[in-house]
Length: 252
View 1 (cartoon, rainbow, N blue to C red):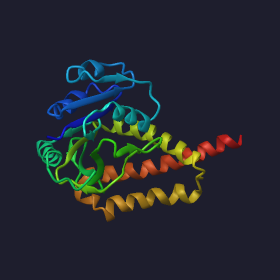
View 2: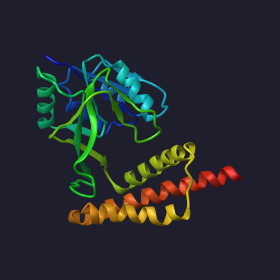
View 3: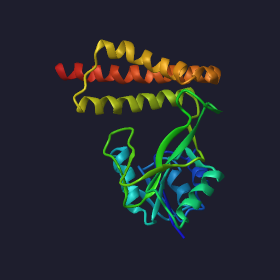
View 4: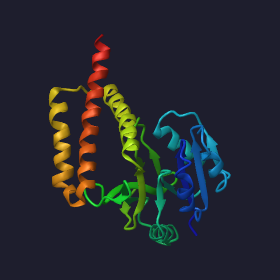
């Protein structure tokens, strides 16, 4: 029988963590690495697992690699606190890790992204594949400030069942995340030597909107698709604007 460890990093996730942990309590082991939450996140997590650790925030990659290092099972499933494993996904995962013949060392899982209470079926948000299930020892998170991902040595496959993702409860929460992640993205771009031009500020946001709303058929999601596409465009604009700001500050 294959064994599965679920790894989760948290910070002030008391609104999400219980439902997340409920969806994976069937696993053999749950590992939570918390960045010293000021709410009840840690207390709730300890109701489901004894493997709750606290570590000062560094970045997403380092926190997730720390959680990965605490896992002991052959297989690892990485999820976020605002995600839920569906019964269908649970069944598919158990079938794979308990199979006598295993062809892959990592699996991409499609995310079913929910926005303001609605499942977004277009805009490039579905199917939104992420490599989340992998053999321990074969995978590790790449060292990036933001938008980290698992790098797996070996063959990779795709699962059919979805992982539910509830990333934005309201518009204020979305804007807060945009502010946070664009700062990290701009810092990463600045460190790698990238520069912001007028072209980037004018055309990249427009191209992003056209891609999401027209090419990826966001219009089929109605007002929700329009909002998601505009927010995606705003993210790109803000990212390059903050990169420009960093360059401007350096010259002063």
